[in-house]
Image (tube, rainbow, N blue to C red; front, side):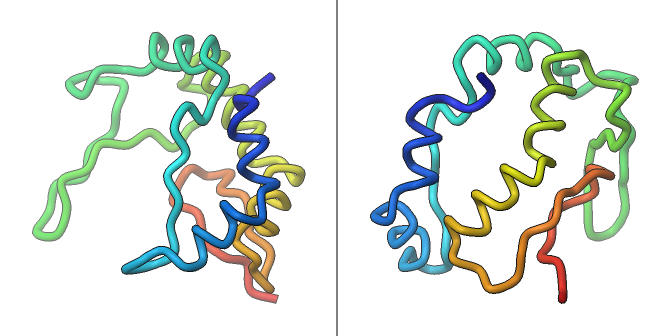
Length: 118
């Protein structure tokens, strides 16, 4: 399993969805223990340190940023999580959770998610 049981339950909860929509100062919802615990531990062990040469960097007037936007640079557990988070099943569940008229699109390039425009 990828997501924790509590996350799966929250994503199908009308109360949690309403809390998301009505949150201030903007719609948001914090989900603790999002991934199943063993997967989260595995992802944490695979993740590079901030000083790693594995990471690309941006440094300019508006940002100091470390990033990796190549799936194949990550370990198998992280890759598995990315695959699930980009799946149509997950993006549909999120679209329904936030009650959006526009479907969410997956961020296959790891560049930052956005709404798809119909």
